[in-house]
Amino acid sequence: MKRLFMFLAAIGTTITANLAIAQDAVASLASEETAVPLHQVLKKNFIDGGPLFMTPIILCLILGLAFVIERIIYLNLADNNTKKLVDDVENALVHGGIESAKDLCRDTRGPVASIFYQGLDRASEGVEMVEKAVVNYGGVQMGKLESNLSWIALFIAISPSLGFLGTVIGMVQAFNAIENAGQISPTVVAAGMKVALITTVAGLIVAIILQLFYNYILAKVDAIVNKMEDASITLVDLVIKHKNK
Image (cartoon, rainbow, N blue to C red):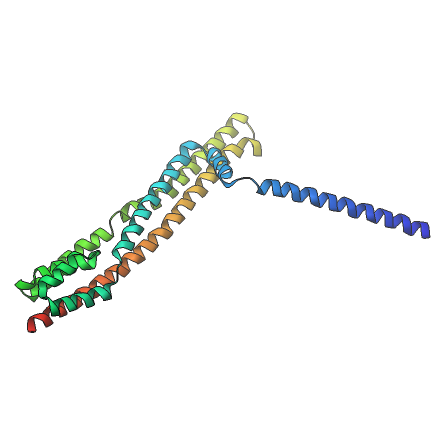
């Protein structure tokens, strides 16, 4: 009986050692798989998806991000401290008059300062002309803020369409392979299905990335426009107060 227990214990030790070796081997294989650089994975998927279909999708991403970066930089430069500008203009009107306030707005960056300058430039013609100048030039500045957004929206719409086009063509390739082989098997349809799936995923990923930035830019534009409207009303009040004095 004692020998039997010793024999079973030896078997258990051997099994445990073999399991440990197998786990180490699996872990090493997993580490080798995860050690593949990201750019190689992307390159492989690009080749598997077909350069003919993946190149337009990548171009949509690159051009879309270029317009996104340009808009973000422009909007960040345009979004200045509106409250400080209003206080400075008020002080300039009190101590230096209209010309001093115009000089301040001329030297200040941003759409609000430009609107202020146009309104102050018509101050001598009456409050109604100030209001018209502010409204008209406010529309011009809003157009500048929304410039190039149509291009970003275009790339958002095109990239999934290009992905779906690759999907359709990949399915056509799969059915042609089935027709030529005369049978259905995973090996026969794998190439066409790979093109279909990779192009669809790539197109959707590009659209999602650009859509997130697009919504952020729209929110930024809305915030600046609200500041412009509030500041324009304040400017008219300041001009009226200055004329009453």
